[in-house]
Image: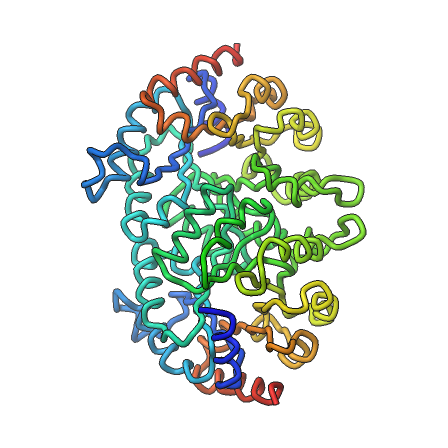
Length: 260
Length: 260
């Protein structure tokens, strides 16, 4: 999917919601459990319930890999079930030396034709470059994450900047706003003002809303740009809600308010 | 596998060679290609040819994932084919927020019962902690990698240290020498003196020998400790050699010389 299409979808639907399919097999309803395809069946119900309220789905690869072959198959099926109008993200946080990253790019852009994949920056440019070589695909690089561990390295001083600021600054020169996005965690809403000074135009994938406690209002106020520039991910607070459709609709309505 | 068993195997065999199964389907011999199980058949031949010369096998997950379900199946079969005497490493470079890292730990320690998995440090302690909670398993955290991109962040100044030095220093306090190792790239051999000051006792997984140009002699001189403390990985220079057994044997003989 191209950047322009994504922006158009967001504006038409008045939603920048990404639903995170962190499908934990131990948390899905009992009546699905005996089914060999339980993960896929659960995802199908979630997608049917939420697709009118979101513009994107993010598949957290860990929850599928943990189930082995069966899980990998559920990931394939889920990806193919997501409507073409929705921006699909493999939340895989990969990254390795060049020839290996090329294999990961192949995995998530060809074997599993996602629109985007999340990538870790630690190993530098040649670990990210192979992902950027695909047309109409997005590489979403970790900037500032929403977990406590962000304090260990990301928020540490690195010369005259914090490490995550250096990452945003340097990585943004390796690609364009048409093939690169960044993960920026929502629990640190005040950081968005600063982040938008470094990368005013890039789309941000923002996790941490819902179960992790980030405020949608603050994120939207601080991080939105002229092209919206935001995909806000909610996982557990939607997919494990008593009523996933209602939960997604509530986020949708709130977002529509901020898009006026 | 426990640290002591690994050390015993190294001393008995006089080898600290890890063979990297970066099995690129486009590079395996033509006569195997029509076989649906080509990757596994290739690995089987490599394992049979090299098992007397190495103490460890490292499976680079990217090359398997790129083949989708078939690849994942080949990874499973390969892991189960490796003799129990050999230390098995999933070179997966995972890392995410706690509940997701727990799923990755489950993937590579339970669903696929490897002895060790490589993990990226960027997201900090809670992204690594779930891996460390397993007994008799090793978490191998990226320190200094062997690629050019190491200059982008790992070798950048971070306060009074380089970032990778901070990573070694901080991460080493989160586990013990019995459940934690580090990846340290071999193309920067002079760095090992410094690295051994920070982490004198930990095992190091050293990639970058062979196709990437690192010197086995220098690594062994600078990085070996009283418990050996080294697993040197060679991938392409063995598995795609005309004679994999001969190539592995040459590394084995050279290592035996350094272990006298």
